[in-house]
Image (cartoon, rainbow, N blue to C red; front, side):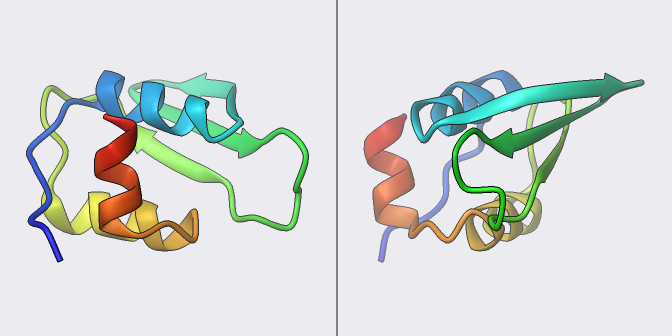
Amino acid sequence: MHKLPLISAKEAIKAFEKLDYQIIRQKGSHIRMRHRTNNRKLPLTIPNHKTLGKGLLRKLLRDAELSVDSFLELL
């Protein structure tokens, strides 16, 4: 298993958009994303920060049912 890199919210959003997630709304600094075709997948809430913490990024990957290696390929 590879280590999670420190990435920005913009980089994470671009990676999740490749997985068919779309931005549905933004309130303050938090961006909400939902999968376009599978509404059973959990929506993702990404804070618009310069760097995302590793724990938060790991939770986003778990909610998106995605492995670390698969996510690294999307970056």
